[in-house]
Image (cartoon, rainbow, N blue to C red; front, side):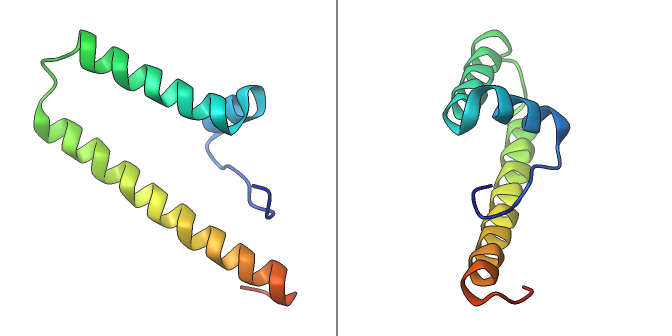
Length: 78
C-alpha cells in the first residue's frame, strides 16, 4: 500500500483502514482461532483449499509489490 497499491476487496480495505496492517493480521488470526475452536468438524480438504487460495493471493501480492517497487525506482510502467 505504501508503494501505491490499493486493496480491491472492500471488506479487507475497511479493516485495513480501521485497524491498520497489524490489526488486520490480528483479526485474521482471531477468525482462524474461532473457526478452529468452534468448527473442528471442518474437513481437512476445505481447510487445505482455503489455505491454497490464501497462498495464491499472497503470491499475487508479492508479484504486485515487486512491480510497484520497480515502477517507483525506475519511474516507468511495470
